[in-house]
Each structure stands twice: as C-alpha cells, then as structure tokens.
Length: 478
Ligand code: 2HG
Ligand code: ZN
Image (tube, rainbow, N blue to C red; front, side, top):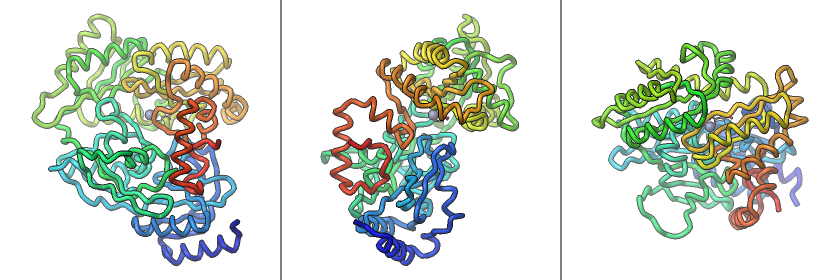
C-alpha cells in the first residue's frame, strides 16, 4: 500500500534529483500535457518530470518503481489515440523526454543516425540532410513529433510504401526497462541473431514495456530529383490502377501515394488559410504522388509524365498536374498534410485508422462508405490517406448542422463498432499506424484474437510486473 506521505517523499526526491529544469508541479506547466491533441481525453498528474539523460531516466524509473508510481511517457503529445495522456485519477507522473534532444551522431558511411528520444523529426531530417543523407519517414506532425514517440508508436506516415514504418528504420535502441535497468542496444549491426528482438518489442509498445531514450536509425542517400503530382480521378480503383502503372514504369521510385477525396479538399480549402485548389475542377477522388531518385539515378519525372499522359489519353484519369517547382510541390503536400487539422477545425469526427489488403481497399472504401452512411443517417465518411499501404483514415463526420461533440458522445461507440466489424470481416486491422492508446483499447479487446491478447499480456506481466509503465494503454486488462 502506498500513502500520500510516501508520494510526497517521492516528489521531493525527484525534485532533488532533477532540479528546477527537470521537475515541476506548477499547474500552468502541466496544463498543455494533460489533454490529448484532439482535445478529447483529459487526465491529471502529480508532476511533470523531464530528465536530461538516460541515467536520470533510470533514476526516475527506479524511484517511481519503489513507490509504485505510474509513469506516462510523453514526446510531442501528438498521439491520435490519447496514448500519452495521463489517467483521470491523477496518481501518475508525466515523464517528458523532450529535454533529451542530442543528435549523438550522423554517419553517412554507415547510413546511421543516433539520436535521443526528444529530438523532433524535423530536426533529424535537417541533420541528415546536412550530411548528404535522408531519414525517410515523414508525417504532418514532424515539427513536434519526437523520435521516442515515433519509435514507441511505430509511426507510419507518407513514405511507408517505399521505406516501411518506423519499425523498419530502427536499427538499434537504448531504453530504460521497468526495473530501472538500461538496455544498451544502440550498436546498429546489420546482423544480430541473438534471439528475441527487444528492440522490435519496444517499437510500437507505446511505452508500456520501458522508455526509449535513444535510437539508431537507418538513413538513405539524399534525394537528387523528385516529381510531385496531383491527379483527379473518379474512383479509388482507378487510383490503385495508376499506382501499379507508375510502379511498373519507375521501378521503386514511387514513395508516396496518398488518396484524397473531394470532401477532404473542401475541408482544407475552408479551414486552412492560403490553401488553393490544385486543379481547375473538383474531382471525386484525387491522389498526391511523389516519386524520388537519389543523385545520379534517372529522374522519375519523365516516366511519371508519360504514365499520366497515357492515363489522361485513355480516360482513366480526369486531370493531372506535376509540380513545376519546389514551392508548388510543397503547396500540394500542404493540401494533403493539413487534412487532419482541417477536419479537427470542422468538428470532431469518429476516427478509424484502418488497414485491409491493398487490393481490397478500393472496394472497402466504396462499400464501407455506403454501408455506414445508410446505417447512420446523415453522417459523411471521409476516407483519405495511404492507399498504397492499404491504410486509410476512415473518418465518420457528424450529420451536417449537428453538434459534432454531442453526436460523437451519443453515437461514437456504435459507429466505431460498426466500422471495426467491417474491417475485421475484410481481414483487416483496426489500427494501421496510430496505435491503440486509450481510445482504441476497448475495441481492441473486443476484436483481437485470444492468442494475441494472451501473449501480449504475458509479455507485459513479465517485463512490467507492477504495471507502472503507461498503464491503461495498449494492453487490455484481463
Ligand atoms: C494522416 O495521415 C494522419 O494525416 C492523421 O495519420 C489521420 O487525422 C487522421 O485521421
Ligand atoms: Zn496517416
């Protein structure tokens, strides 16, 4: 049993250990970190602790373990599933990794960067670029999302098609385990076959098995040439057909293939200042395509142009534009990357981050949308994102004119269950890239195969027997 007196003693010890830069109980300091990015889940915490290095993280974990104090790790706090929001009861500490921002090394020779957990993704992009290299994972929250969070959520983003999710880019990890020991696994060996892969276990563990303090990450050569296009077309099937033709014509050059419905373009044009329609007319479906080549390799623009011209000619595409400058390319990307923000500004939606086999996705989008809109009268499905990965964000918006928050409170659970049942029937996953966090936990427990849940609970119990690492996330209680 722990008592308030023991909690006070722990807080005093942590304050002494971390000093004023590393410890605060000031409500104003804590406030931004107590609510999730979408503003839907609120929690509370006794303090915000911000260790400066792995040694301090280990000391915090050891003290917290002795006091049986839950720890909630946080990076940029941009989780889509409230994975970094502390519990409502408030007996927890937020452990921010944001002070650990050293880029320890960038080696072009090995194609490896070693970076600490609190480094924002954008900063890693810049550091790699300065060495003629590139870290090939990107997403809309790159300015705030941190390496520790990206590893711990096995983040996806817009280049998974070619380079895989975070998991595929993590070559090594340094982490503090729940007993306070430090796992020194940063040596980025190409081959290392010593049994269970702790590094991969920690990727996507959402901080439930330990705290990632640094990562060795795969770099690839910098981009020499890139071609960015926006295409208007009639159906998701036509979009997937286009992807296959582009892949055949450009080899592995296509790295982003993002599906955007007309509704999403409308939301962006309405809510994001400076956004401009990419094509003369509105099209029911659009894709944003990026193909790249390293320096010295053939420029993919020519092949892309030929494929698009043929598609316009045979009528499978309605319209297309290839960016003529970096500024135009960035403007096209901004249209895609601000969908989430625009949707948030428009009012909360019931969000679903779903995966099905790539070839089944066009059919899933069309029939799923019709089924949901028929079952929940007035709702509007907006399905966008990573078609090339078989992953879309299948978000269901409230009926026009309705109070979106009230609608979500009343109908959200039924909508989620309905959509997730469709996903499971299609052999898919209810979380493609956002993780489980808090908001998907009940649905995950309802739908996951028993063997998966049992193994996951056994791993959690073995490594974190007291259940202090980000409790209430990812692992459903038995
Ligand atoms: C994206 O692809 C993000 O833009 C966010 O994963 C998706 O807001 C969403 O539903
Ligand atoms: Zn996404």
